[in-house]
Amino acid sequence: MMIEYVLVLSAYLLSIGIYGLITSRNMVRALMCLELILNAVNINFVTFSDLFDSRQLKGDVFSIFVIAIAAAEAAIGLAIVSSIHRNRKSTRINQSNLLNK
Amino acid sequence: MDLPGPIHDFLLVFLGLGLIVGGLGVVLLTNPIFSAFSLGLVLVCTSLFHIPSNSHFVAAAQLLIYVGAINVLLVFAVMFINGSEYYKDFHLFWTVGEGVTSLVCTSIFVSLITTILDTSWYGILWTTRSNQIIEQDLINNGQQIGIHLSTDFFLPFELISIILLVSLIGAIAMARQY
Image (cartoon, rainbow over all chains, first blue to last red):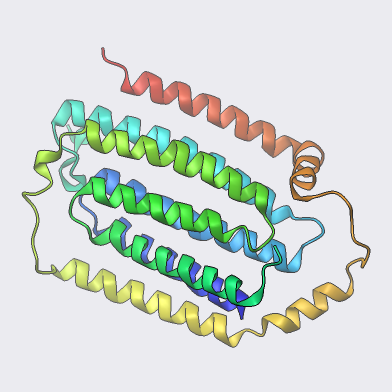
């Protein structure tokens, strides 16, 4: 009963993260929704690693890697957002056409 | 972790409610600072979710890195970027694109739920448990992760460290004032 509950919660986080990533007009909110998707992946990794691989725990190692990649991605993304904001005075996604001219 | 049954179930339901409310808050709240704080609620609930599945090291790492670093960085970015422009595009009615996206995401969610409920997880569990060794090892979770990181995941670990170094230098070089 435990595993279905956790997997349904993880699917909920994944789908609401995809929804927010597509519909958000603000770049920082899109980064937050990306963190939601990575969290859903982490929950799945840890749950399956505890249930099916409880001697080796390789899913935990992969979730550590996912956390490190998420930290790098947040740093790079926020640097890009602050640089765009300095040039354009706006962080709307549909108004950022810096590569256009 | 072995908790008595009603406390365990109550904890799981409470954390699930926190996840659902926080996930809705990240997407639906109009002010980005509130959605950053509700993202913090989601991250704390996820970290506490890892404790009943015996992964204490991952729970501690999640709490330190996600809540302590990434969420604080997001809150600082929201405070640093001027907040006056967020209220202008607030509208109550859904556009067509948002309706289509919510329909697609709901269908993804429903199909995932039917797949999860159709799969017999305990059959898979019995077939994998039968060819594992029964003996109980004495090393704990963090020691096992450390052994994996220093033996057979050694090359990805070094690659992750190089990626972190390069991305932090790149972030500083991009956000610098010229």
